[in-house]
Image (cartoon, rainbow, N blue to C red; front, side, top):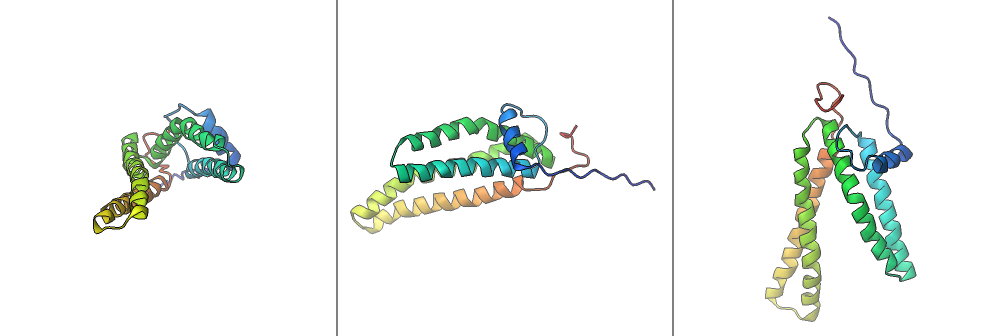
Length: 166
């Protein structure tokens, strides 16, 4: 019986992952390894965190605007990277619609938080607890669905019988 070995993939480094992230801006075909996906997320997270720190220390709103620009500039590359990552797992890109769930819950949380804080600081009544509960439920839903998506995108590569791998 002849056993065919599948070659192991070499891990993509941080520099290569960042280069691929920007070079494959609109490339929704092909595959992306776990390391390529997580290094790109780490890079964008660190740049965003740096902008937040600079905004706090410099007290300048320009850095908050840079965070918005970073979000807009990385939205499509993240979608294409997530599509390639899902293809590497061996699944269809239709699974990316699940990303709307944590995204929608985060928007709901960001909408409810200022109202919940304003109401809780002005005066306390049992009816105002509803705002806090809605905010807490939106955050817990966001956290839970984000963990599920991170788990899905952390699955190992499917090297054999993967229809998306050339």
